[in-house]
Length: 361
Image 1 (tube, rainbow, N blue to C red):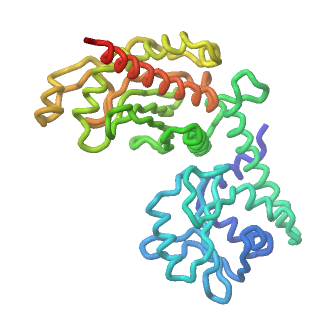
Image 2 (image 1 turned 120 degrees about the vertical axis):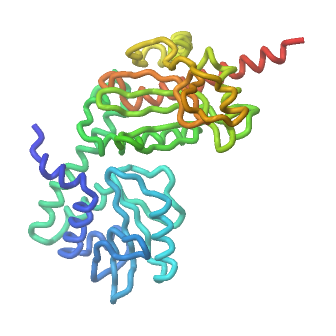
Image 3 (image 1 turned 135 degrees about the vertical axis):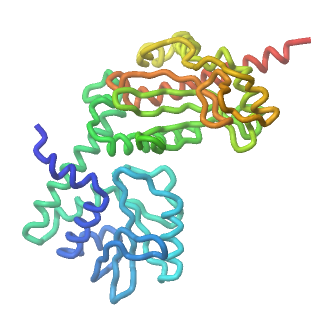
């Protein structure tokens, strides 16, 4: 039985976490000063940085010595980074710190330090203030439990202690998991990002690989978290002005950009993917029926209203198929294998087309 549900709810709010750090730092600044390597005698919340505000600013003798941006459920945006760096450039270059639930962010900006939240709060467990260590320990216990959940969903499904996405009971933790997965995909060699859906704010993770021989067009693997399922979409994606090239590649790969084709590819492999990957709830093409004249849309610039190329699409430059998998059958470890399989499948299908073209007289 979890006994700190109320505390967990408090810690899921970045504002609450900032307030708690300010409180601890005001009661006993030494643990945080030692961790960051700065001396301070004042800690401010929501300090102005032009049009933005810093979560925490540490000051000494009235001058800023460090600024801390805290992230729990949300990602650190480029706009926020620029605001901090612009502010720091005219305020004596204080230390810039990102503290989050992530073990390591995907792209830590140069000149920034990252300290996981559990490391920050653990520092106060050694405080000499009478009540601070006990409260810091309770906070650290919650953060450690969350960390174990993140680690559990990254274990092979057959390993002891492995968890599935269905074991994660808060969307904030699922967002952390998606960011950790993006880091792993990036380390494996793909362009990757984690984000949230524009409608419901549900987590998603995406990876891309350049289509060989086609400029500014990529294969995309796209996992979108829903209430009880993960919607895996894959196909072709392109930059601005690439609608014609994306359509050409998608047409060439028409037989490959289907759920059934991916399943057949996975079943034909002799590695761990074929025996451990979960099944889609439904097979088939995983695509809508084509409607209208898509050539007229991408070649003649006609409006897309009422027309569909026979793919799931985002705008004119992302064409995909998709299928759903129960969250209880999937975790980060198996989803990473599945996304890798998507890339291998699309790359192999494109290479086979190129080989066929080269063999023709």
